[in-house]
Length: 290
Length: 153
Image (cartoon, rainbow over all chains, first blue to last red; front, side, top):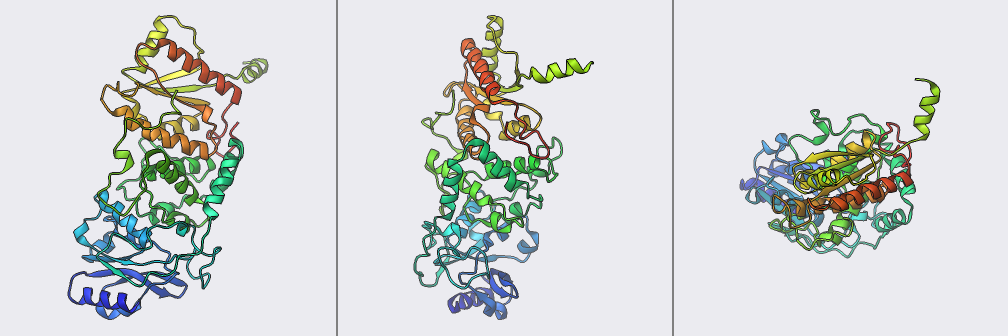
């Protein structure tokens, strides 16, 4: 933690960056912090409560942050994948962002709830994580903590749904999605959702009905997940941001697994790797085509 | 209209199937099927697009929302695309759409993906008849179409 604070202080005082986006302790748990002066650098913390993906704040449309100047961002391995995705899709220039990567031993499902990582409290995204030691960074900090407790909650959930009949799955999703209030927090929290104009806001033609009805909610989530196919970094910000606790991460995970199975592609920390939907292979599987 | 006629219309439900076809192969193939006077179920409404890669997954969602019971998406065989690689790209998208619809509970039999070339009038007839038959078995798709949800059947 001291290492992070010292580095942030140095970067801010020698003018390398104008703002450090990191984590601070707030009244209701860990929250994102925007540190603009060296004196404030003591506020920075990093622990198992740091669940947020701060890469979202690199979105060039977030003018209130870009106007501050050059940015340094504190990332975990999963967040580094998001930064890589944004560099890959030309939203962020590699030279314009200083990546402060933290070695990570897993985070909690939600910030401020529990004090230690157990199989029940650890985030489902930490299951089988291969990026505990981030590979995309300017500065890598901290000691590598022990591996997070094993949890299979997400894969169990997906396997249980797979076992159901189509009608049961339909009813399951109708029930889940009927709670959606169309606040679009899933989109706003997502580091990979940065279109200038979202399809959900287009009115001519109106592809997605803006009303919060099961029909429209299903269309909205289907579209959102499809747009994330091959791009989703599995940071689960959508699910965490959802005020109705809809298991959106499950849809994202399922699609990511399908992309991996079919195209042997995993969203990774290498910005130069082409995304699966910008490319194709003549030998792609077409067993579903008649 | 007397109530008797209305009742009869309801009981003799037949599926509405929407087909998104490419201009260069499947549309010409469907045309061939027509000029060859092949017998096909009259349930399919064809929408002609420049290429199968023009099919946005939203088209299919919208089709279901607006009352389609089944959807056909068809284009040139891979390697035969008028635009060289359009259907290769489309195939990747369809694969993921196919998987996601399955996971969200839409019966895979409601969406048919097919490659039909300009000379395959017979294959088009087969695709149309088989899809209509499968959708008939499944019954009306009230799901997407109902504002308040409704079931998949």
